[in-house]
Image (tube, rainbow, N blue to C red; front, side, top):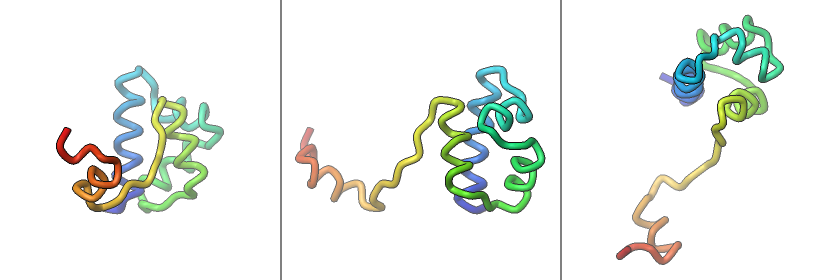
Length: 80
């Protein structure tokens, strides 16, 4: 499963919890329902579209390091 598919699934799940249908989610993000459907099937989507979908349901996309211990060392919270 691609990272885009995982992110889309998370966004769609949250939209369902908020009572939104997928076509409404797409429309509020300025996308067509067809675009969302194609992205789900292909596992590929422009990052700008993914960001708009996430923002529509109150999420933010951000990159994090792949090393949580190093993150804690860098932020000075290793022993908190």
